[in-house]
Image 1 (tube, one colour):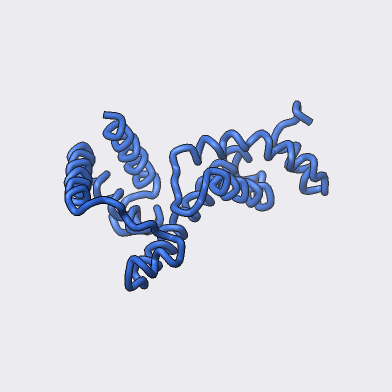
Image 2 (cartoon, rainbow, N blue to C red):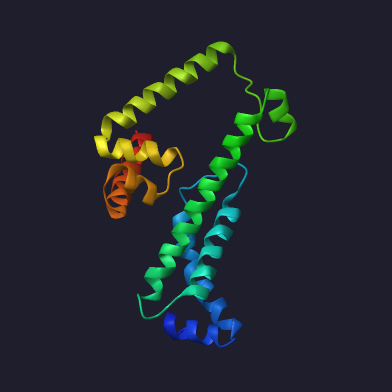
Length: 189
């Protein structure tokens, strides 16, 4: 089975061979890990993210139409979409918890938030460092990258951002990719 192309294994899977899907999953697990390596979701660990990516992969295997593109291309897109969807759902979930909570004690009871042990001075310094870091990031971004990043952090999808900025989804993806690379450089300094 290891010598077969992805499309051949996919055809076998659709004919009922579960081993073919297992082989495909083994092939694509490293790709899923690659996409999840820089992601973080509050309340989820690395294995949860990998599971999200693998669910996107299984969705790709179940919905692939070989007339439109290579399976590899389609699988990559489905994996990314699954991870972005998980991130968006997680941001919405925790945003709602924070918005609807009346106190830190209530959040702590939910087990979602640990109160800070910092002194007021430490909190002030942390806010200052955060502002400085944010300034450092945004001063390295172009205007488009800043706009796209802000909209993305608000929870908008690539399509929604593209419509709002009157550009293509590819341009949005490119701007976010460049912004992430610049942010990563800022974090390394």
